[in-house]
Structures are given as C-alpha cells and as structure tokens.
Amino acid sequence: MIIEDVFKQNLKFISQTKLDTEKTRRQYTKTDTRDFVTIGKVDLPSGRIRIGDPFVYMCEGKLSPELDRTVAPGTYPVEIAVSKTPVAGMRICCARIRFSSNSAASYTLAEPTHETAVSICKDGDMTGFPVDAGMLAFMDTNVLPQYISYFEKCRTDNTEFNIYDDYFAQKFEESYKKMPEYQRAGGDFLEWAIPETNHRAVMLSTGFGDGFYQCYWGLDMNGEICELTVPLIDSDIVDKANKEFLDIWDGPEYCIVTKHIADGGKITYMVHDEPSGRPGDSGWQFFGENENDEYWSNAKNYVLYSVHRLADRYPAIIALLRSPDGTAFFCDKNGNFVPDEG
Image 1 (cartoon, one colour):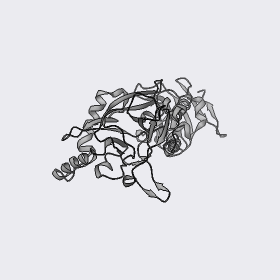
Image 2 (cartoon, one colour; image 1 turned 45 degrees about the vertical axis):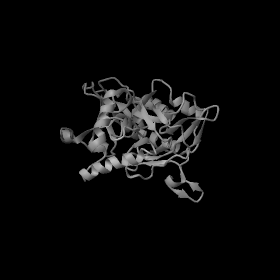
Image 3 (spheres, one colour; image 1 turned 90 degrees about the vertical axis):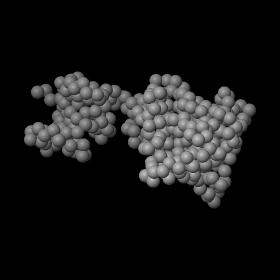
Image 4 (spheres, one colour; image 1 turned 135 degrees about the vertical axis):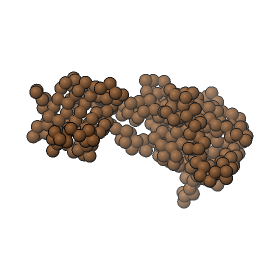
C-alpha cells in the first residue's frame, strides 16, 4: 500500500460524525509507530472556542466556527498524537485541548453556533471546518478579532504581505528546532501569542493536509467536558499500511530507472548493484524495452524512483527485491523474470 491509498482510506475516517472512544484512546499511546506530546497552551479568556484554518480563513474571519458549548475561562494544554512510519512519515494524527485530567468515556460531535456554521442546510447547520493551508488553530472567540486586526495592520504596511511566508514560517522553524522528534523539518506546530495582547493560540498541521475536519467534545464518566478533540488520521490504517510497506521492501527507498520506465514503460532488466552509500540508495537499477547502449550511456535518461511505487506498478519484482548484490534478472517473452546467470 502506498501513501495515496492510505490517504483515500483516511478520507472516510475524517468524514465520520461519530468517534470511537477506544480507537481515540489508542491514538495517544507510545509504541514503535505512535507517540504523543503537549505542544503548548491556549488562552480561553471567554471560554468560547473558535477552530479553523489560521492562514486562509481565520485571518479573514470566515469559515472558522465558534463551538456552541463553552468551558470555564482559563488556559489549557494542547496535546497531539503523532504517527511515525516509513510509509507516511511523521504525521499529526489527532489533536486535543485538555480541560481536565479525566479521560473521555464518550465523544459527541461539537456543534457550531448557528451564526458561525460553515453552511446552513435544510436539515440543520453543517458541523466541521475546512482547511486549505494544511493547518488548524485553536483560539478563543474574543481573541480572533485581535488576530485579524494584527495582520490587517501588517497588510497595511505591506500590501504584498503573506501571513505564512513573511511571518509564521520562521516561527514554525524555531518550533521545529526545539522539538524535532515530534514534527517534520520546517515545523508542524506552534504556540503563538498575539504581540499586542499576549493571548495565546495553538496552530498545527492537519494530518494529510487540506480537507474538511470534524471536532468532538470528550465527556468523562460524569458527562462533563474533559477535552475537545480533532481526529486527523486513523493510526490503525497507517500501521496496517506500514506493515504491508515493510513486507514489500524494508531497505533504502530509492532505485534508478530509465525514463521509459518512469513514464509507464515495461521493465525488461533489473540488477542489484552494491549501494553507493548515498542516502536512500537501494542499489537497484531497472531498464526498459527498446533501449540500447546509446540510450543507456546518456545520464539524462535516468531518474531516481521509489522502490515501493515501482513495486506497486510491477508486483512481479517484489519477490526479487531482497536478492543479494550482484544479481540480475531479465524479463522473458512470457513476462517472467529469469536470473541472468551471465
């Protein structure tokens, strides 16, 4: 299974309007592929919560619903669950504001206020929020106007101002340097205080990026709100895909293929040389049909390619990928790969 397949399956997960308590609990466990950490604190002076994409919609004051239930005003920690696998890389799978130390016994869909719902439908207000910059933010309702005002001033001073490139990119990079074990290079999360008020918001990347996400109130055994949770990736799907990924090939990810193959052509010859030592070099090289010495002698006719993507296109090579250095195979007229004894 390659990353596109994982993404397609995950769309069903983020589209659901019911959340499995046990599955969510498992997100926040420490295993070889899972971890969790507190990434900052959010100030909620009014106890009313806004959630949305901070760089496309929140900064414009739109499509960022206020949730219809309130919590006690205060400052609360934000925690993320992280998946770390070769198949999907480092990904934030779930994010939550914790309002108490109690565990969630059940989850209920977090409804928006009628005035701030993303869309009004015949059968009720639409829940959830859109993401178009691959990020979400937790913010107090009374803090949102402060956030908008601050960046309106930035645009007044510079009409070409870009909220991420010109302001937040450096701050996310600094966040990465502080906690590189939980995020990708460039940064995946940030606790940030509005300079003029010092009210803090927390921003983080949304799993596989853009999409439409739901959020849920976590209720403890007494029915009290103990967390606000946003599921982003089903870690069970990723773990299953990761096992399949490693069963196919667990070595360095890249091989060399001719452009004919990269463009969809057939493999006619494959050879496993000793890896060069360059990062990611598997040592595998693949050659296509209707190629000759002149074609092969031109370095421009070769590209780096994912071993797993090639295996997805040509399953017949999977059984041969763990062949030792110095072995080679050619494709016979029946489409079978035969050892090249020469």
